[in-house]
Length: 449
Image (cartoon, rainbow, N blue to C red; front, top):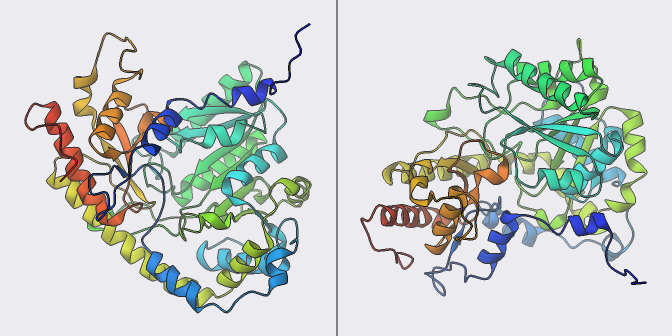
């Protein structure tokens, strides 16, 4: 008898990360852009990294007195010290405009939003239960939900709605989710959660207060939970073209009249607004005592370091400092957005207007025609969109393909304009050169520009 010393079936299933990982691995092996040492290197605008405030953060770090050694090397509390949870509660009360005060007892700290997505799915759902989420959405969500919690992630297309985030199509949006839940239940899947990204990733739009209220009521009627990943809450900006778009409104601000707050939960982390991804710090905010207590039973697996706990408690505990950061950050973010869309316009690249986030959703569908084939896999990719993505990589730019986010509109890509701010315009020029090369207007070797 052959003995099997290999991984479990569920571990083996996680090996199949799909074409997104294949492309990332391809890009990882290519020299990356540096204006001095690697001017022809690839410009990676695929990851939601945020370098806009690096200078501010460098000065802040230098100004800090050292933390006591015991605050660095000791075990900290499982789900956040009293100081951290109190500081975080003050932060949410100041910037998220909750309908009732967030208390320290409502806040659970853990190792980032990815870990907390897994935790909240485990806490609320039994194995096989359904989690609905609208698309397009961030491409790692399904992995975050399913790898360990073993829930059923159910994508729900909202592309047919004219205003899926605002107030005009609320009834249609609710009906769309109701149809998806009913369809899942007909297949024997019990839907337990509606999961939103607010602000939305990759479109950079925000849900209106009326929409959030309606979705919370719908979830309550169905015995479901509304969970919102609000990791881009402070990454909002003003621009002439987005002045009428919806500002950020947190699920924590949903009024309690007619809605039970027991089924509404907020996730937030330090990695996007503050570019502190290495701190591995995120928060679950819930007013549901049973959910909170149940979640704490699994925080052995989301246990943040004592250093991160102490550092973030000190940072968030100085709300006026955070406010000064926010004002400067949002000004810079708006300026970088303006620079980016100006370059997109001047280079003839269509895009969707945004109000929040670190990215714009661009539309390259016009150029898919150059990658349509008989369906063979000779290029190594299955769709014209991914062939176009590979073409852009070969011409020095990497973007996140919309199909990885569940976009039903082929040819859309997420362009992150905060990852390499000084090279974003150069990347757009390279894109234009690569697209012109498809049209036969220029040579294809443009990476030295």
